Image 1: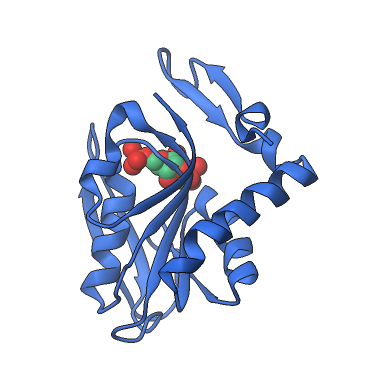
Image 2 (image 1 turned 90 degrees about the vertical axis):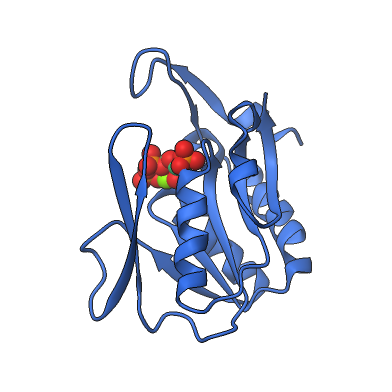
Length: 170
Ligand code: PRP
Ligand code: MG
């Protein structure tokens, strides 16, 4: 199955000039979602994760089912102010402005192998920040995984670990 057949490209969203790759058509197609998660599981399993970390919000849609398939725990990397208890965050730069992601301080034990998962790798800024945050709290990050990679943006070059992607647009 070509997963691209189930990903819809929507021009000028969220801003003029941006071509938005919409995964909602894939998610609502039972076979396509099943195939996508099966392929992601096959790509990630050799990295032997103890935990799968998902990046809010669309990353959760990939990371939680992946963790179930791999028999791993799942941890959330969230937008600021969403997680209860002690948290550790990391601010990172965007093209215009900055953003922040947070994790619960006790989410990962030192040395645990954590694979970070998102739906899309564009500039790589979000994924790079997620990996840095996990490493800051003592995780080992053997790999990252994404459904879609916008390879023309060369985000992969900013990620210091292997990136498993299922679909790539140049
Ligand atoms: C999108 C996408 C990735 C990120 C990729 O998330 O889901 O998380 O941008 O961009 P980057 O590689 O340039 O950092 P978005 O912030 O739109 O939010 P959402 O997942 O909550 O919809
Ligand atoms: Mg996102």
